[in-house]
Length: 164
Image 1 (cartoon, one colour):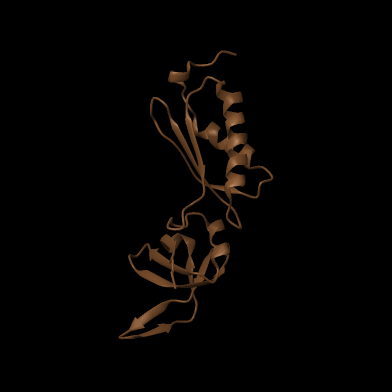
Image 2: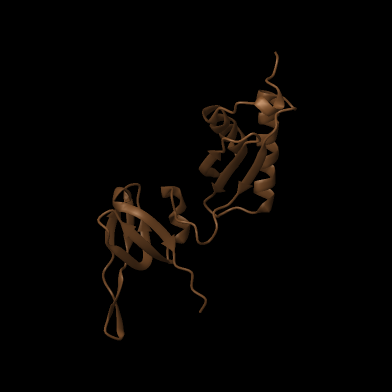
């Protein structure tokens, strides 16, 4: 089997997604995002997460597995840059599987209708989340009973970082 010269390698995102899925087998981790830049030397960026987050060892293991798959598929001379990372603390939650480990933490929700809600995440279901909205009336804070928000209504959700 002949390989395309390293500089001209064409990376198929669908094929890389399959290689990534293979690299994640039995890891308990899942891909939050995968991007492949369209450059002379493409950069493949993978963001992973897991039920308990992930550490450097898990990132290194997936990197090795994915690199092996890339070499088998595209040849050892294929030129690319690979970055395997976890979402930063300030990154929005983009996958429903990311929510359960944040139960008890305060979230900032930006809803599709343009409204924003902030408060502790109390529950996660397959359809959405429950959040106790904290509202400010003059100088007092008040917490409303938990309300349900379907995932489809959530435009963006971020964990509110507190340094108290």
